[in-house]
Image (cartoon, rainbow, N blue to C red; front, side):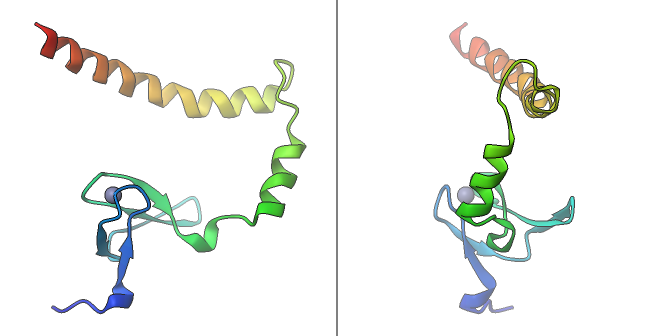
Length: 96
Ligand SMILES: [Zn+2]
């Protein structure tokens, strides 16, 4: 099968071109997975405009009393902690 140029997408992290067949649909958004660096990124159609993005950020209070913001942080940080523990474990194995 020959891919047309329009069927290829460039990874924003490693700049490798890959087939747009690597799509994931989740939470109502389209995501792409780069097989080279494993980055998962959203389709440009789902990236908000700078004005919409600022409006959303201005809505948050970013204080310890903002429970919605704290929930958002926990949702983002908790899964990453397990990943970091795994990375630290692997790095310690290399130091032996
Ligand atoms: Zn990549």
